[in-house]
View 1 (cartoon, rainbow, N blue to C red):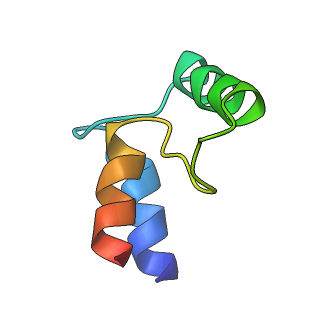
View 2: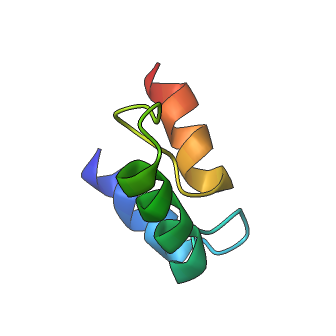
Length: 53
């Protein structure tokens, strides 16, 4: 798992989460009462959540 994480940090060919993505997800979590417990901030987080199930 650690090796996967290190590879993913060094691999910039895929989607990346940027600060505005995190800010938008945080704002949604804080202001939307129907927001889920876990909110992926961008495409890379959505992919990781899909892999995790």
